[in-house]
Amino acid sequence: MVTGDGLWMRQPDGSVHAIAFTDVVGVEMQGPGRVVYGRDNCFLPVLPDLFAGIGPAVAAIDTAVPAQLRFPASAFRSAD
Image (cartoon, rainbow, N blue to C red; front, side):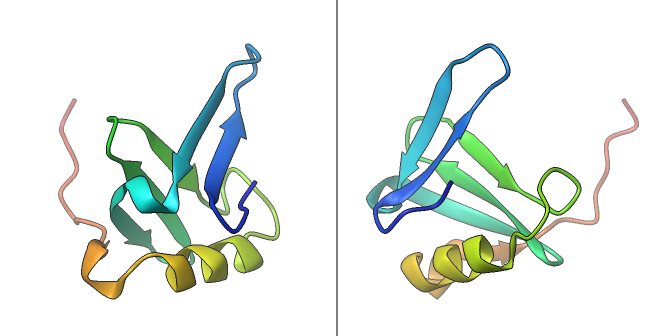
């Protein structure tokens, strides 16, 4: 879920992970999706493979996070 203050996600085990927009240190742009990285080593994927209808969430992230913190996904993929 994306709000005006940040985003959060509830895991299947019931735990909740949250990143305030003021704590974002980077946003990886993966095509139509985003992976948001927070100051506390937390990251939250906002990807079409995981969630349907992510357009409004991606727009909110792109509006709230300064452009200098957004970067394209790397083409590097580990052999592991």
